[in-house]
Length: 111
Image (cartoon, rainbow, N blue to C red; front, side):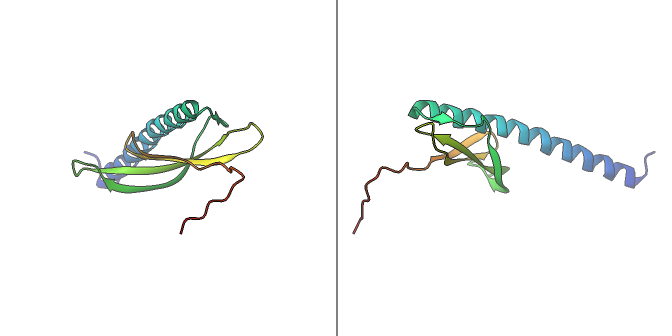
């Protein structure tokens, strides 16, 4: 029989491997979503990657606990600048994709 410490150590490493695999799958989905959004808007998706901004547990529509990850990326509208965008994923599903507004040269004030 295995001692309890070895079983716990094995469970820890299995959980760590699952977290890594799940994070890679979510990251690939975030890259695809950011790339598609940039292409749809006629923007250039820079560096062809996203970077993790946050990770936290959250419940999905069915009430199941999943990891919610927020990723940042950069895009360009002119080819000479870098603008930040973000994508929020719950599991492998896109919850929110934000392409920050680009500077237009005019200032609009809402009263």
